[in-house]
Picture 1: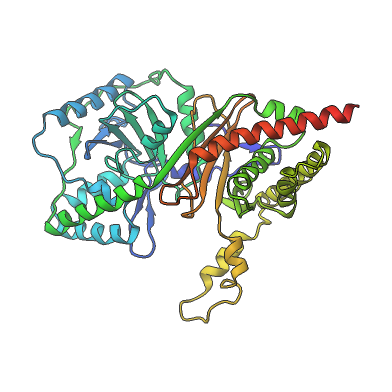
Picture 2: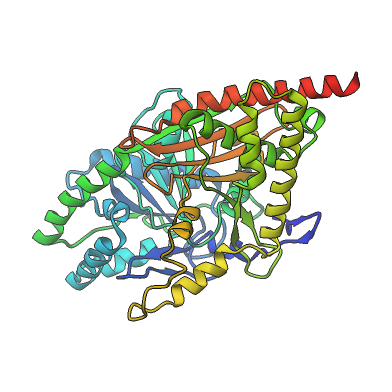
Length: 466
């Protein structure tokens, strides 16, 4: 992949070190990431019906890339082996969807049991990535495709601790599930899109077939009654967690960035952010805190900063927009002001002039024995950091049907969007247990808001010509 840059200059590529061969290891109170770059390992892990296998991207002896047909043969051999096997290993992967401190307890216990466990963990932790072959077919619905990618059948057949997990259903629907701590979504998404551009895959020069015929093998676990009982509880926990996820996907094809720039004359990202806030106001009758991811990769080892998208200007616009006695031109002027304020805020955040990462650092410096901080316990701080709307934009690609992530508060929404020239895609997640939220209702209302805002811009543009 070529070094990335924007109009402002080059971007730090360090996060690309953390895509392959990286695992998140559960440790009490604070997990750790393990892996190195470049990874010295040549294998990846494959999960089928909760069984875990080792397969190879590179020949284990020569280190040369295997041919595409050789990789395919390994996957077919694994699927055949699962069909024929009579002994199924316990579904340890379900622990990776449990609370991290609970998983750390049972991870340590599995290591203490000895047997094959230490070697099994090493194979998993050093695998370049994970492939989940789900023995299920799903409907053509984009919503179902997103659910299959997020968590599949109640979180089974997954190892959520790998940085990147490719999910393939029986009817060849493909998605990628990412573990967020090693890198931000943009980085693996760009890598995945680069791979998708290369389809159909072509063997690289010097690709070989496997020199060790029996290199593909199934990983085994040594367990005791404590682990068996814990697995029952883990399945219940993860089932409740995944059943509580309300997912909806939007493909809005009436317009996109082309019309936004021509008629709205604003940043497409700012446009979408105003529409998101309008949507929430229309559904719930109030404005709330809005988080948008701002990248700080213009700096060495930069990750993200918070763009606080809900501003005084956006608040004024949202309230003004719903007043019937206000002209389209007045609404448009307020819209322009709100979008300009948004561009200023997200630019400052990307320049590392935001406040939230600084405040997080200060908050983490407070010791348990210190007296409560008047600032961090203040209700205004708590309310301003309640991200009811957690949002993020991603680059547009025809090869990606949708993107998305989970809500960060029980009564909120999580959403990721991409803006094409004539299409807007969005993945939305909320919680079933919250009776006030609905991902489908948000999707439908957002579509109507997109129409209404476009109509406002067009009416204002027409009157400006008169």
